[in-house]
Length: 305
Ligand SMILES: [Zn+2]
Image 1 (cartoon, rainbow, N blue to C red):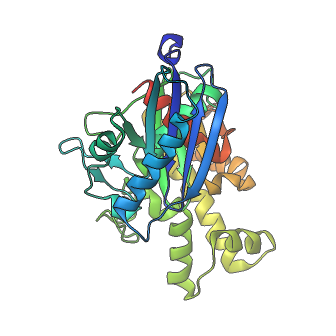
Image 2 (cartoon, rainbow, N blue to C red):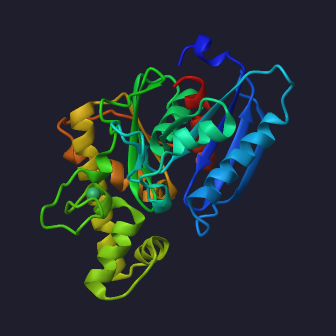
C-alpha cells in the first residue's frame, strides 16, 4: 500500500467473527487509539449483529473531534457476491444472503468496505507483520476452516469473482470427505482443524479435538500419530501445489493451527517435496500479529479499498 493511501484520516476496523467482534481505531500512522471487543450475538441473529457493529463504530467515532475524517472497514468470514453484493460462503450462517454492506452504510450514514477475513489477515501481515518487504504474498488461515488471501505489493488481489486465494475449496481428493461447498476432498477437509477431527471420528468412531490429536501424537499414540502424519503430508501436498501455481515471494500462516511447531519443520519439508522445484526457497512464515491481524487488516481495507 502506498503512503498516500494511508494518510487520509483515522481508520476504524471491525473483525466480525463467528464468536467475537473486535473493533480498532487507528491513527494515520498505524498507532492504536481505541479498541473494543464483544461476543458476537449470533443467537439473536442478523439485526442484532448489525446493531452491535454499528454501536462499536459509534463508540470509535465518539473518540474523534467533530471535523475528523475516518474510514470504516469490516472483515467477515465470507465474501460479498460479485453480482448481488449479498454475503455468501460465511460460516456465520445468519449473514448469508444479507446486504451487510448496504445495511451498515444506511445505519451509519457513511461508506463501509467489507472484505473476506483472509484478505484482511494477509494485508495486515504485509503492512506490519511477517509479510513486510515481500512482493507477492499468499496468506493462509488454518483454523476451524481453511482460507487464503493474495496480496501483491501491499494491495489485496480480489479478482473478478472476489474469490482470489480461496484454495480451501480446491477439491484435491475425489474420494475424500464431503465438503459443505458441495465438492469432495477440498483442501479444507484435509488440513483444517474440523477436517482432521472429522476424519479421525469417521475412522475411529471417537471425537478428539485437533489439540488432543496433536498432543497424543507427540506422546506416541499410534492412531493420533497416523492422523497427525497424514495432516502434515496433506499440508505439504496442498501448499506445495499452491506454491507451484503461484510461486509467491512468501507464504504467511495464520489461524490456530499455525501454532503447531511441526508445521514449520516436517510440514515445510513436505511442501519442498511436493512443490515443482528441487530447491524450493519460498519463505513459509508464522504470522506476527496473531489474533489482531484481522482487525488491523479490516482497518487498512477501509482506508484503501
Ligand atoms: Zn469445499
